[in-house]
Length: 245
Image (cartoon, rainbow, N blue to C red; front, side):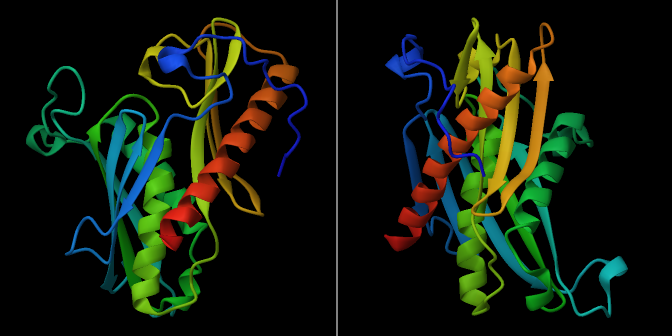
């Protein structure tokens, strides 16, 4: 896992709320917010707020039956009032958007790295991430918060299936500057933006990146990955602190 800060941007920019280029938004992780779930977390990263729950059920999808292993699936959704203009519930439209499907698949892939599915038997872990308020980085906040909810659900199951912390953050180039943890005002005008998912002590789980305006050189990629790694290291510490408290 990259740990060098060489080449990271100089903190000279004035970002929204006065943040430095390599500074995360304020983070709050509150556990046990849903008494009916095996694990639940309300995560707030700046003005982005996501309710993450994890519930363990008996049984697995048909393609895993009688194999002695479990499964994890994830669902993601934005509540109607999570953005400035109300959006209809996707259930009312009868179809999920391509964006929703893509995000919940990302969450599922990321969190399956955090659990040894062979240790939970033929059970399915269902993770739900509901965005209460969106201000950029909803998918990365969902992964970071849901991993804590997953940890608590597995702890209740009394198993050693939890393999390690998984967290995610956004990073991008805005006005020619490499910035960590983009909020909506930055993400909406980014020249380049990435979502980076990592597992502690194991490395990268997934990297999603797009040049929105024009191609970027390899040096910018290396520096954005280093910037994301720095931010995710802070998120790992916040996850463990939430469990300790």
